[in-house]
Image 1 (spheres, rainbow, N blue to C red):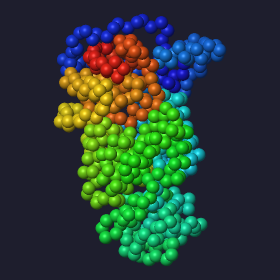
Image 2: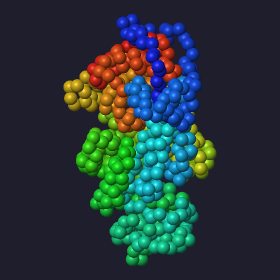
Image 3: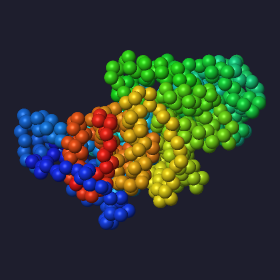
Image 4: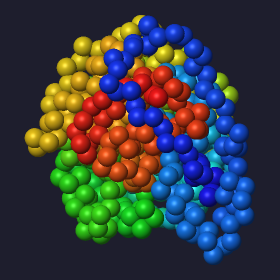
Length: 575
């Protein structure tokens, strides 16, 4: 069987003893202390798959290989290779809870670079449809899938739509341009073959020249550069650079007048453009795990997109992520969160539409509301912006990342840092190390929040699951358990546990590969693929046997086990 799936096949295993659930479990602080460094594995986590003709060192004829593989798969348990290495190296309580999203671009689209990001802790790979063509994105998506299949990772793929707000063009093919103070640039609605030396930039919105006035300010990419409109000449708008900065292809443009954003015309533009719909069809065909929708204004567009995905791909469970980056989205925040499968706090574009001093408090509000409503939330934009050019972040950036982790956001996202930066692996390492340190500090200080979680379930069955998860999280903290195991078909019970933010990691077992990848976005979840039965005792015995053989648990470890199939809860020591 292929080692790439990180599966275990043992000939004639001795049946494990039943779990000692009948005994009173001993809290961790009262149990004899032992090293939390787990046994090392002899397997190479980054090796390519073995031939299908060899299983446990015994030659298997090719004619029988498929039946052997099928039998092995039934006894297999799959976990992300990087997570497995982290568990062996540091033990349960030192695993990272905050998930990491990396935007893939020219700096990281190669197989070796993608593998380096996966080894470094990337949970979700993001492709941005603002840049590159669909063939390029298809290559990236399939490269991530190959990486998962061949190297044992479980990296999810998120496709981010361009949206129909006002954008600059592609800068004539140049990767970037620098606007200096006092320079005069022309923003034109007509396509032009002129080079950047002429300082002419194409704008994608035909009504641009009509909407702006002399004296207006143009914010490029959330304020990375700023211009003042000085003259209109037909389809051309002459602007003087007042704040120098870097101009990137397809950068967003925001118009400000008399101290506030001009949004009347933007409000008339559709959230999902005709290009976006073609990109969405592309994402459905390629089987992406998430589609992030830019410039969402209301819940209506989210519901419409979900219906469209269901109609185009029966049985698809693609998650729809709403990006919060407009004033309209803030006005309709709760209904957007309820309609979506997750939220992205796109602070760059959001900061171009509201006063900068309001961004921190709005971020905190969004993160808190998402947790209350049981939706994963990603904090994005300019987390480590300086690392696009420099190998170390500023101390202010580290403090910003730390605050997002302290707010218990589900995920942090790198944009330009990993897509086009000079140090993508170092930027990811900073996110990982800061997350680990702040999470450990939180546990050491025993800062169990007094946050009262509101009820989110509608059906009676879901209400039972919700109460079980709330109780399990409290028990886990009070008993000092090593891990919570949850057996879930659709991931809902695992998400309810994640919302409670227990001190220990959550092992989420599911038979669905797509559910497993989607759970990779949620705080504290370590998703496993495991074929399950309706017999909870059988599931536990097989899980303990497989995890012990992989060196991921030890006899005596204290766990709480939940199941959404039986809606049960058990406390036990690993036999």
